[in-house]
Length: 367
Image: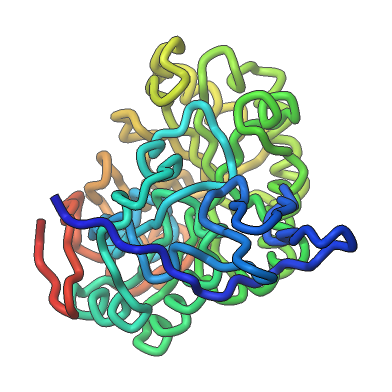
């Protein structure tokens, strides 16, 4: 077993000292108020003396080369590989978390890889990855580390991707996303009741993040909703969500509906039937959304990209394997319709492979 890493004492940002001498974190909408030695809800931001420290700076729960479609991002450099990594902890408390062993980690044995931003950028370059992704747990809670990694990667022409729940304050949001090239944001449901009961959070900050990304940045982003039977999959909720989506984000932002499997503290719910995902996709498309996808199921039609102009199959997907490709210069080869996204002349050829790697002393080794 790999030895656990000691925690870091990297200076954290976005905090203030209150009149009662508690330190208030202002990175996420929890506004955790800390006495000496206390950690925030996320577990990784801690008060040490009269300052905040990020205890996971330079520490990772592991690295893996993935297809970019796994993030999921269907309109961002399709077919290319992305170097994925996370740390530990999370600022949400989702009872259905699919990465709970990492995001809910309270022990440092999950942090077995030490990597500086420069080491990560070099590894991504050597592995031929077009981008790096902050994923597995939410990069908002290790924002200082994520932004530093993104900056060094950009110097090498490597893009930065945030896979996030979008739970961040108005104060921190602009700086964090200024360092990102793409994002996938979890819209976990469209009711406050769901967020309160199952995530210990609020809906509005997530909607604010989505609107901010759409109207105030050039970040390419896509949205994912995990549909849980009996919790967030009713026709009424899906119609309301799709109407808000169309009005606030427009028709060009891709939306992924993905299938739930029982996990963590929600083992009593069944797997999401494929028909539920198809129904959600049809509802969203009925509101004028052009790019709506199904995920975590085998569904060639729902996983592929179709031209909004003429209906032609543009990018065929079978799980994470790309098939037919009918894009040229970001446009449909049949009718010339411009497809929203970040496309290159040639698609990537990484395929569905998943390659776990270790970064040790500057060396890269497959696991």
